[in-house]
Length: 192
Image (cartoon, rainbow, N blue to C red; front, side, top):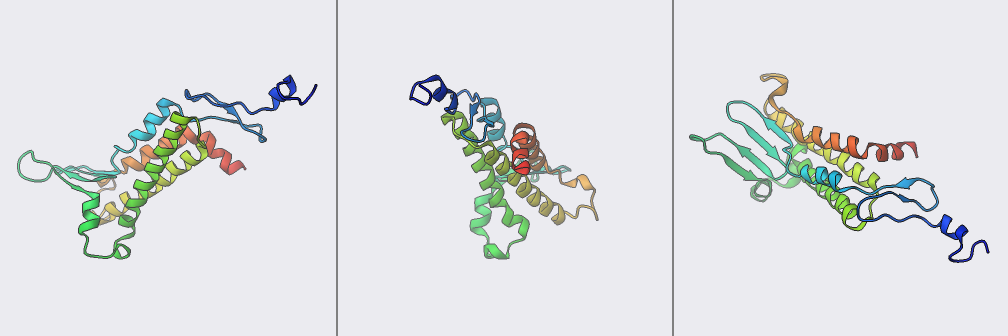
């Protein structure tokens, strides 16, 4: 009979499920095929946690990462670092009094971590909304760019130094992953 549990008609209407390898699954009522992040895509998202937000080339190379500053300035070949949490903990000013680009730093960290967690859930459990992961990456790119712009203004980009005094590596890489890996999923948000 049509509609009985186990009949062919019922099997056709059931949503397909995804396995851990990231194969597609059919979404319930929308008819669209949803995918989860594959291991290679997940690796790209997680690798963004190590990509610097900004690079300041020059005599003393400075790297601004999600996790702090690294600089080659100092005596000899010594390199120094300053973790971002130390900056916020040792800051005498209240958080609201800091420049907007510095206040965007924790947002960049949070969006990157949430995107990595979402992609990890897709790989590990087969449960993910790729639109959420892609959206979080887009927000992480915007926050990283904001931090880079703030660093650039403090270094006088456009007035005393060239436009490439600060290179927003993190924002560009994050946006590339968001568009390249999750672009079709992000288009669904706009088209909906």
